[in-house]
Structures are given as C-alpha cells and as structure tokens.
Length: 257
Image 1 (cartoon, rainbow, N blue to C red):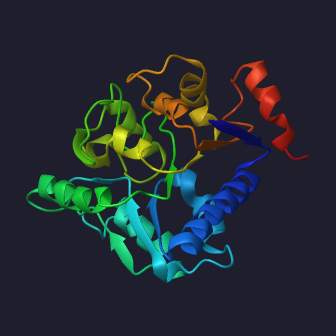
Image 2: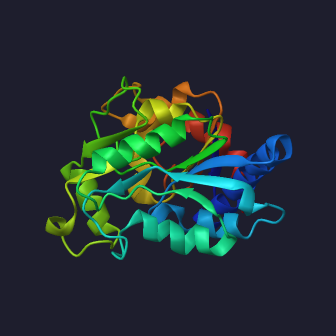
C-alpha cells in the first residue's frame, strides 16, 4: 500500500482524482473500455468533483458499479447512493453503462446476485473507496466477512455506522437509518486491479490509525487493504493526525505548504 498525506482535503482530492483518471485512461487506451467502482458519502465530494472535471476521459466507454446501497431506501431519498452517483458523477460526465444496486425492492438479495454476476464477469480496473468511522470498508462493518466469495452481500449495519450517517447529515436521527444494506464483499473489493482510498477529516483519524498500524483483522475491515499491492490511500493532515511518526515522516513530502 502507498500512503500520501496532504495539507487539506482539496489538495488530497485533486491528487487522488489525478491517479484515478490516469487508471481509467490506461484501461481505455489498452482495451477501449474501463470498468470502475465508485464510493459515496461526504468524504467523496471533493474527489468526485475533481474527477468529473479531469480532461481526456471518454466516459461513454466507462462501465460503472458502486460499492453499496441501503435496503428499503427509495432513489428519491437524499441518502440514496444511486441518487448520489447520478447527481455527482453520472449526470456530469455522461456514463451510459451503469449497474445500480436497487435496494428498494421486495428481494434485494436477487439484486445482489444479478449485479454481482455482472461485476464478476470481468476485472475491475480501478475501485474508489473510503473508510468508515468504525473502520468499515463499503458497508462491511466489523466483524467483516473476509472469506465469502460472493460479490455482493446483504449486511446488517451496526450502531456506529448508522450514527455516522446521521452525523454526516443524511438522516435526521438514527431511527431513520435503514438497518440493512447491499454491500460489495471484502474479497470482491480486493479483486480490483487498482484501489484508490480517499479518507479525509479528523473523525476518520482513529479508524485510519487502526487500519494502517494495527492487526489486519475483521474487527477493522479496512485493514485488509494492506494486503492489496496496488492500493493508494490519500489522507489529509487531520485524518493522519494520530498516525505514528514513521508513517507520517514517510508521507510528509506530499504535504503542501
């Protein structure tokens, strides 16, 4: 894993978007198409804004999947990840081939299986991810399943995850947050050729430290990213604030004045 620390989340987002755009561009140049997986949430705002303005990407040949979606939440709800991606990515760049996880159906398991089959049909060129305040990866809350080969799972959201969604302003209170979600599995995430992790802000600092410095364990799902040889994690000085001195020293050349 490569680690880059920046002065703020704006410079972080610009650098992460530059890497993401380059990965998409390489796939398009090599095969004429690219397969990507996008993350959602407040931490991705600036990154997606920078990515959608990156020059030279033929988005019509980009195929889009996403990491997760709530079960039972309509696409019209402000917290819907389908709505998030439509507003902040798809509508801005004109992606035509997309595979949305519709959790607002009688059988979300059928959606997980169908989209999972489409996802597993070919490798993912680049996957974008964040880290939850509880260390979750996608909606794989601790203890995460590190063993299943299913591309997507129906998972139960823990209390810390649900409180984070309220804290980010997506819901008025915890009672409104769904208890379940469709989530890409950990093993499926690790199958991506390249992973770009965007994790700014102080509230992520303890989860970042546990992911980078602690044991690789299902109790800290994002720690598994250290086993992926082509993962780059982008932090700002706030999310990196409690890392050990060695990790910070190794990354500090990326901090801008």
